[in-house]
Amino acid sequence: MHFSPDLGSPITNTHLRNPGHAAGASGMCAVCTADCTGPCEIGLSAIRGSEAILPYEADKNQFASEKRYPVDFSHFNINGRVFGAVGLPPDPYEASFPNADILSSFGVAHAVPIKAPIILPAMAKLAWKEYFTGAAISGVPVVIGEDVIAKDPGLVVDGHRVVKAPLIDEMVSAFRRYQRGFGDIMLQANYDDEYHGVLEYAINQLGVRSVELKFGQAAKGIQGMGRVPNIEDALRFKALGYIILPDPTDPAVAAAYARGVGPVFEKVGKLPMWTPEDLVRRVAELRKLGAERICFKTGPFDPRDIATILGIASETGIDLVTLDGAGGGTGHSPAKMMNEWGMPTVTLEVIAHRILRGLEKARKPLPPVAMAGGFATEDQVYKGLALGAPYVRMIAIGRAAMAAASVGRQVGEALRNGSVPKEYARFGSSVEEIFADFRVLKAEYGGDTLNIPTGALGLYSYLNRVSTGLKQFMALNRKFALRYIGREDIVPLTEMAANVTGLPTYGELLGAP
Image (cartoon, helix red, strand yellow):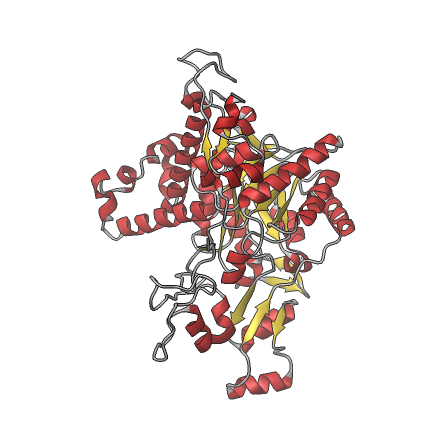
């Protein structure tokens, strides 16, 4: 069976001339004709060179792996039971799915309550205001993504250290305006952000209390990269301390640019060069600065690296480690890296479970863990919590949450322009009529509800659907609090899934005949 996608994809805005007849090994058309103008990735590469590595219009789109992994959460079904109740009295008037308790907390020493075991992972583009506001009204934590200062026209620095970053301030404020005691907004820092003192600025000047150190993610294990269109921006980024290739301060490069020759400028993010000792020291520094919740974010690296990261998290009392499996979405990753590196989410969660069980046997503190990597609906959330039980406490929903925010924003703009999208005309012609949960928010926010962006309403409604569905699956298994969800709640449907996870199949649950 061939798992990788063919060399034609909307991710790169390409297609095969004859998609019905692709060569499995290469992904090319089985017949490559001499008169083809090359609409596939090979053709795009022939025209655009290394630019063809990256997704198409990454500033406007989100992307996820197209690879069909040998095992994913569709290879499991959720179990169900008909006797008893756990977490509520076995009374049909009480043990009902609306009463399932999905309240949780985020953080260890300085925990904050959250309304669902969900975190919205790093984002700093597209409908970001709606994304952060939607998290606040939903009562879940959310993460501001890396490298925000590079997008900030109002940035002020002293040398290479941030003095003022209005865009980060605006992002934090988008959450805090609507926060009502649940969740928190976290600022993520990559290796360049650390060089620029972004976390120090946010903690000292903006009162940010939750921060996240980034090692890598599901789709892009290396750091970011992107074309810089002109020498003025290239010089500005170079002055800030970013890697810019070719070097715009080189007179020969500047002269070549003026003549319109030579390579275009590229901004390349620095690979993190942490050591365990560096991380222990940095966590202590952040706590001393005033950070109350310090988190790690990493991708599906070598299992030995994951073990090291979880070990450091245990030693330093990290508040959350988010493990991002291959297959999830992101904004700007090399297309082939997105498809062809790292452990799929199920495999990564199995590895993490094994590592955490070892820490527990060694009587070491267990860091809270969140799983990310392609989660979109309540069945996947439940399966993720069950597979990682009792160690995985949260599920990160990124691309789907941003999609909900974007849809809400688009529908709101259509309504303001006097048109009702045909898909939703049956519900009415106003924001209050079309967004079913508007009245719920109106009870909490009163007149300020009218100021909530429709994209945030879309995200709130989407998370409401996921939360309600999660409660239904809990009731299906007669478990009415999150802590009772266990690995016995999912059953592998394939031999591969059973082998990877060690979970019993339906036949094995019954026992030997």
